[in-house]
Amino acid sequence: MLLTAENFYEILNTFRVLPEKIDSIDLDTFKRVFGDDAAKEDKGIVYAFRTEKLIPRAKGESDVLYIGETKGSFKQRYLKNAQRFTSKLNSMKYQHIIDTYGPIRITLALYRDFGDSSEQAEARLLWKYFQNHCEHPPFNYTKPKISDMD
Image (cartoon, rainbow, N blue to C red; front, side, top):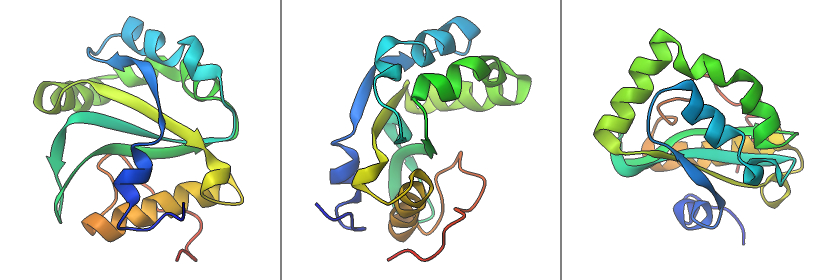
């Protein structure tokens, strides 16, 4: 199915959901989520951090916190850096999200369903999010490197 702004959330809801959730801000929780066996199953993926409740956006609302990509597995991308999620800045940010919008779940899909590269697939997902909300997800700070999106 071709990804469009109109079916963005329908497609996102087909992503595989990792079994563990981020429900507290401590290193053990991040290691449990990022190190789960299910987080190493696929390589060459796009992924989304999603909340249980919707977050108000410039236009509408969304449960998407972050959209990313990796050529490796989710576990390879995040487990080695789990401690950065417990820094003072990140702890404050993630604690607020969990307290206000509920636990965070990780969803992922093979990038090939959305582009010729993981970077292109990520950019396409970010563009469709932007078309829906007139801004990027709250934890995406950089613009996609690929700007020729349809």
